[in-house]
Image (cartoon, rainbow, N blue to C red; front, side, top):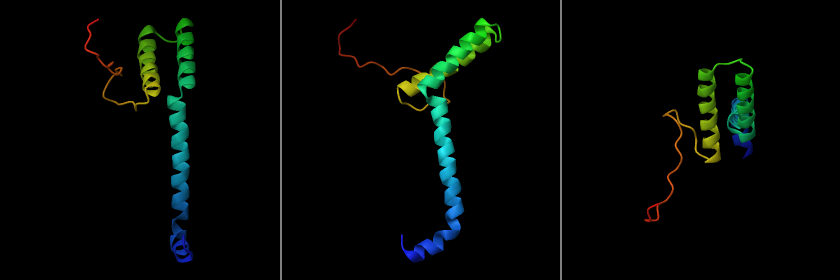
Length: 98
């Protein structure tokens, strides 16, 4: 970056700083949302809440499905979509019937 370019772009430094900070916050949020160990811990806490009677079966099943979908997407490295429940990738067929 040349001296003239640096001087001309100096007023944009705060904007670049905010953009950098927003990117770091987004990275941390994605890590918290998709980290398998965090998801497993949340599943364990959910099971404990059900066992203690803190939540009902319907709420448990709904949250468990959501967490398992997130975990499955993370394990298969596909971004979760709002289109619906997760589906596993199809296994390639070799032509032989099982």
